[in-house]
Structures are given as structure tokens and as C-alpha cells.
Image 1 (cartoon, rainbow, N blue to C red):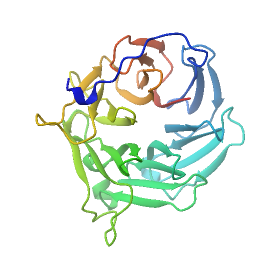
Image 2 (cartoon, rainbow, N blue to C red; image 1 turned 90 degrees about the horizontal axis):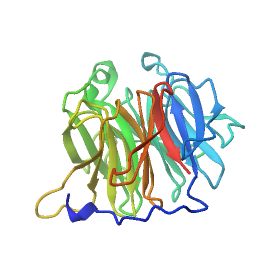
Image 3 (cartoon, helix red, strand yellow; image 1 turned 135 degrees about the horizontal axis):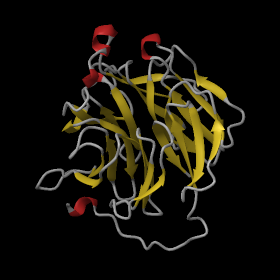
Image 4 (tube, rainbow, N blue to C red; image 1 turned 120 degrees about the vertical axis):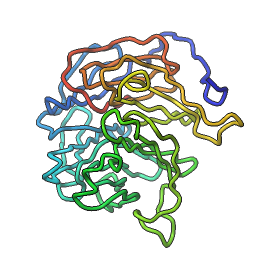
Length: 307
């Protein structure tokens, strides 16, 4: 492990604000759950979601946002918003504007939602009320391209300090063709989402990279990978700033997942929370130590968010 992404250890002391809550998506049951970060007080707050996959929480405004993948061949994906208790549910990105929306990111400074559209082969964003929908990256077009899993955009996060977006392109199952890319938050002047020239390959030859989270305090990118071990079924991290003379390093910090999907960071509390398709939620310190199963047998789980 390089010094570039060593996080400062924080003492695990009990604080009045240490509990917090998690919001997670039950893909198989079409439900959104809320639970304390110690695994207690679990509640179902939203039902009848259409294959929910990505979730973010705006605690200050009292809103949760989530994506509904829908049925890929029907192009019926959507994005919804509700209050933290599930009330005042509203569709903000209706069917027809995004094909198969996956993981979701909330960028508070600019008031934008960012998401990846898998079969749509796009990285997209919109205002928090769903207006001004934009395509930032287009990796392919048409039905033939949509069958190519190397073009599928899945995970998304944003570095507002460097004004960059990061996203994953999963690739076929266990192919070793998964990649993480980054580019500017805006399409360069005179270019398009399809032709932009500022896209950089951050990592390639990954099993199946899925969800992304940034620790902006320590400048470290975390991601889940649902491919086969030893590189898959893991949580990984790497420094995002210019690499050292020895090159950029990737570190596996957590393993033995049953197809890892969602990840949420609590940097102040030195914690991460991870979901897998096997139906479990895990917590661990940011270096992967002190791994603990919070819940299990919860159905097929997708995205997770922390407040």
C-alpha cells in the first residue's frame, strides 16, 4: 500500500452522533429500507419500486432519490424522489428520458444529480427537480452497441474540487474487461458526449467494477467489484491524484462478498457500508478492518446511502 492513500486512523469511540442511518435498496422486492448503522430499527419506507438500483440522500432537504432500472428492452427506466420517511413520492425523471439508470450521485454544490445509464450507454445529469437533463458521455448508440457490455456505464461519483466525474463500465461477467474512467464535469467546448477527448482510463482489466464513492478528504476512490475472486467480490481503493513514481496502486480492502454492489462512506466516522446481491450489508473501517455483518438474507440488494 502506498502512502498516497493511507487514511489517518480514528479512534472508535462512542459519540452521540455515531449511529446515523442507512438507506438501502432491495432490488428483488422493489423496496427501500431504512436502518440504523448498527443494524437495528429496520423499516420499509417505500414499496413498489421498478427494480431500484441507485440511491442518494439529501439530508438537509429531507429527500431521498433513487433510480428504477425498469425492463431494459422496454426503455422504461426512471428516477424518483421522496421524503426521508417515504412520503411525498414523486417521479422527477420519467420514462423515456433515461433507459436503464443505475448508480446515482448527488452533487450539492451545483445542485445536480449524476447517474449512469447502462443500456443507454450514457453518463447523465439533471437538476434536482429533474429539469435540464444532459448527456455527458455517450459510449455507443443503437441496439447492436447496447449488447456490448463493455459500453455499459454503471457506477458514478464526482470530484467537485477537480471538476471531474468518475464512472465504471462493467464489461461482460468475469471478463476482466471492466474499466473506471474519468473526465471533466462538463463536455469540452466544441465537442459532444460521443466525441469528447478528455476521457481518461483510470483503471482497466478489472473483473466487474460497479459502484463508486470518493473520500474527498483523503483523495481516495473506493469501488465495489462483483467479479470472481481474488480480484472480484471485493471493495477496492486507490489514490485519485497524480500517481507516484511507482505508478498508481490499487488496494483490495474488503473481500468475501457475494457479488458486491453498493458502497457508502462515512469518512468522519472511519466507516464504510457495503451491500451485495447475496442480501447482506457489511460495515468496516475504511482500511477494511473490523468487518461486521449488519444484516443478512435481505433479498438481492443494490445501492446504499448513509446519513
